[in-house]
Length: 312
Picture 1 (cartoon, rainbow, N blue to C red):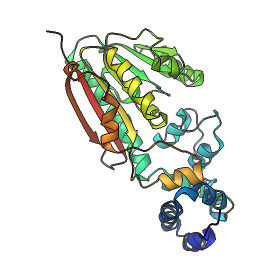
Picture 2 (picture 1 turned 180 degrees about the vertical axis):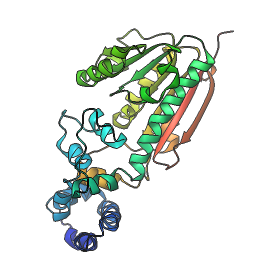
Picture 3 (picture 1 turned 30 degrees about the vertical axis):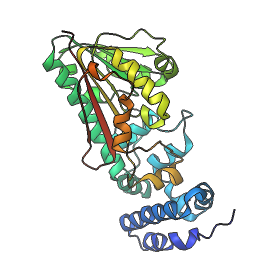
């Protein structure tokens, strides 16, 4: 395969800015150059990534603990709960970089990007959804699918004040669930952890029922369309009448895609808003009371919210 993209030339302006100690400008130039290379290379993008990872800029990028965590995958998969903790600035497990170092400067810049901002907004939004469920129904039950470290629990007024009957935190990563138990269940929150492979949830092999809110933030970024629709239907069936299902997915056009893929080896399935809404295509229309979709303020993550009709 013949590549006409000169990676070093494309990254030269970013390296010059970096050498002149203009780090913020350098990283902005780098992201723009990576995006352009991704667009220009098309199906050859994978080959271009190999060249990018031989560059000086790639090796400098690994000084950022957020970036290097994504690339090294200490838990064996991309986008783990520890990576989200880096985005949140949560140091209960991760060790923050030493202040006034190159690592700290790069960390500040990379976690200020639109994608990371969208993940922080998502965490607060999930907490708001939990609180809304508590307001709508006394003793509401909540299910978080692929819950990670469940950091939205920190932000939920309802959870912190015992206004939720139960939140079931389900994940296939036992280390993540141990952290949930330690930080939330052990401190008296009505949180119950469930260790289960996502394939069992998709196949309907777990008994999930009577939830007033079910949400999944991040899982759908890794699911092919057929599995995404099947899981959506399974979760919808697990709702109580009047319950709400909220799903999220990163959007096409997110500005940081090339950086995530090239520097962090973090590959997602990016979708349009209409493709996210299509998760619900297999749910009978007469069972849906309300369906609406929306985006976060940075237009990086899309949402679909599906309300189950009350039985008359």
